[in-house]
Image (tube, rainbow, N blue to C red; front, side):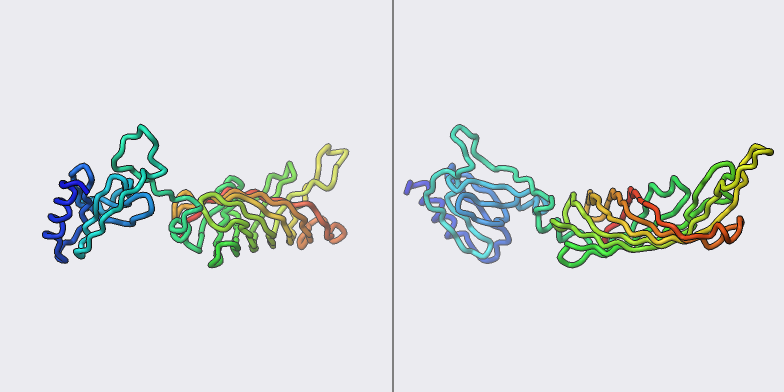
Length: 282
């Protein structure tokens, strides 16, 4: 061992006392740095600057470190090692900034995602509806149970000159399956059920003399079963954005038809829904 290295070890032993509240890195080039050591791996020392404990994480190859003097007085002499595999020939050695990932493969990020989501389907507001929802995610993150409530905010009647529809209210539930759990961008799939009331002006009678249709307002209820799939994006721990599209079959039943009871009937029809949702996750 070189004389200057032995000298550094002796100095560290003399001045190491438990009262120290920080760690000290002694480098082979004769320099030292006051730090907070996070971990010593097989190839490097990972640490934070003592005056930046909330700052970035640094990594220094073991080949540059002589010893570590810990805050409790312990001293660990670093054995001679080959350069870290991450240090290529010709690299400038020194502190290396490590970016801490916060993506779906980061357990800390996944743990920061809340299990409750409340939000609104902004696409439905274009049609004069307010569609609110609440979703509860299971502990393992693989299943979400969602409840939706939709109400119309349109005033006045539908246009009697064309066939127009207005969903007066809708309520229902979804079961969303997340095959790869929770994360920043995840795919989900599952069934959805909806029940609601619909208002419609229907052109059912053509008057050849007057040259016009007679329009009859009608109301009916319906029950729809969908196959739903979509993408969930968690831009942060609290902000959630989802896009979903569903197709299925609906059973309609007229409950009020001014044209007469002979027009009252039940029928099946293909139904669908699209959602662009903004949510708050907690």
